[in-house]
Image (cartoon, rainbow, N blue to C red; front, side, top):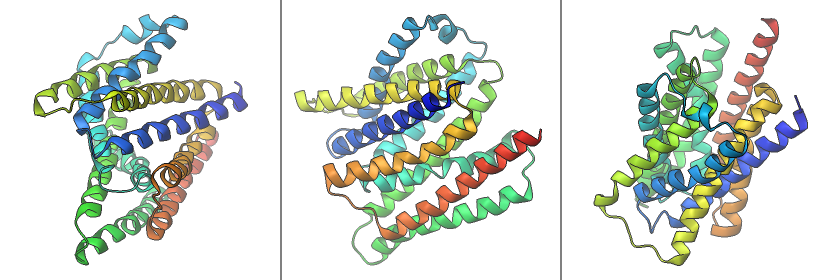
Length: 295
């Protein structure tokens, strides 16, 4: 174990994920979401393949006992990715990132329903608090719509929340895959499936990108791939209970990029709601860490 290295890798992962989202936000009004999904997945494969070849783990990535499981995880995951990218056309970057923090709360509920896991009373209490934060984040979007200032923010909020729920389903599928599959194969086959799905949207009307747009599309794909590698390595160098809370640093990076590059400031209520959701997520992590020690 090398905890400092694990922390550095996880923070690097949050940085590159924020870069990916910021670049997607720049193109959200110009490029269809399906086209963004393709470039994110296809060019995300490049650093992944380099890493797998460098570490001689390509065979581990190719080996699988659950091809259908990878297909299901890929389809659910790419749907979540598409919704998240689509949301960026309607709401600020930091707000879109904030909605992704509802995913751990969704996973707890899905684990109880789909995997039959027992949910203690403490978790239900934390979930209640977390969902109150979601209401706070949604409130400005409903207010904008009711005041007649357009349904764009509400549409974006709904898309982002739906993407977070979809990510919850994808992570639940991942938990099933980890029983027989390696982390390398899960990441590799997801990239393959999502690339194919993204490419299938070509007949729906892609745009002919100029040099600037191509560079941004490739940049967001490579950034996403590097982020996945950093996140995978982080859990090898440090316990998940240490690196998991650092995921929330993505919101700090996203806020910085949103303000510096796009002039976007998140709504006060969204920030407050995000803080409540983050607090609920940290409480879940803390409780799981204590439970793990007890076991």
